[in-house]
Length: 215
Image (cartoon, rainbow, N blue to C red):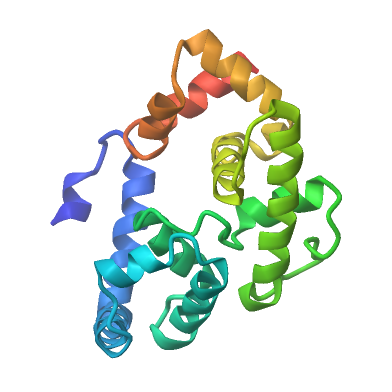
């Protein structure tokens, strides 16, 4: 019903892709397996607010928990594991080893993040990605003269790469971090306003148009 209702509506292409993926995961029982194994994991590991709070300043225990999540919950690996902990307000020293982060590190000359055909498995690059983004955070912190966490550094990378993803292939690299900041100033937008547009599928096409016009 929802697929039929979005025809001709803003963000139709993005909505269709999301709905079709969701339908596929339900029909294949992937979603049910994820929910079932997640509930078992939370019960077995006694995950609660108190346990989450104990991880706030324990980088090693947080790293170990992400590794355990990746091995225990169906269809949840290191990327989703880190994003879950971000949602809990912790894991400031970790970064998800997703394409946004690895492409950024490759472009910045960090070794081990380029590939010719297929991306490396996330378990292979998780720790190196965390270490390298930690290095990026230190360099940025030195430049800005304030403490920057790897979590904050990867958030900046996400905004840059997400906006690049809205552009045609031949124009993606035209959008530099400096130009993205200039775009925000020209639009008189805060980072939160940019975030709101990136998270709204009905706004993505307009955002893409604004970026192309600006460049």
